[in-house]
Amino acid sequence: GDSVTQMEGPVTLSEEAFLTINCTYTATGYPSLFWYVQYPGEGLQLLLKATKADDKGSNKGFEATYRKETTSFHLEKGSVQVSDSAVYFCVRADAGKSTFGDGTTLTVKP
Amino acid sequence: GAGVSQSPRYKVAKRGQDVALRCDPISGHVSLFWYQQALGQGPEFLTYFQNEAQLDKSGLPSDRFFAERPEGSVSTLKIQRTQQEDSAVYLCASRAGRSGNTIYFGEGSWLTVV
Image 1 (tube, chains in turn purple, brown):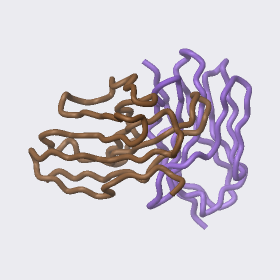
Image 2 (tube, chains in turn red, brown):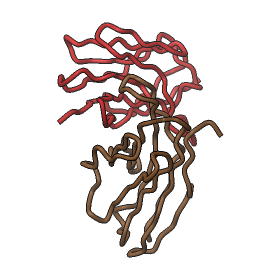
Image 3 (cartoon, one colour):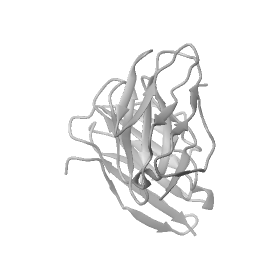
């Protein structure tokens, strides 16, 4: 079935470090791809999305490019902040259900 | 409010008790989803509605779980004869239409079965 494999955490970085969280998805159909974020004590919220191959989603300094040839949607940020500490989920959305990765917990230390 | 609303936010049930969890999606959203999120894991798909039609219920873990959306708006997830392994956060989400549109999540109903 459809699945999403996400880089295992937890990830701990110092402020201003470069962040990459890897995500790959099964190569079936034509899914849309998303990154959702869950800040401590809050609900899931959309971070960015891409709906077709070669699209780049970006928001709050985060970026991810929909790569069909490598079935990947890696999340990157050039300089993380303490406020970026959260759990990040890679998600593929098909016509019906959406499939989540297991989440990567990011902690940014000052 | 403008977001997805879920109730109750917290529920403690005795083992064997029935529970009902309610979801009010964003007005006009055609698609509605239920997910189960265990501690430290990603949300797991339970079921999907398009308007009042339940198009996919492949994620429901057993026949004790039942979901409905009779008028294509509010949805209820019912769990009969609750077991300890049902303890989780139950997330409701809605979407305006196609798969490329943003899915908006509620804050979840935290169920603890004792």
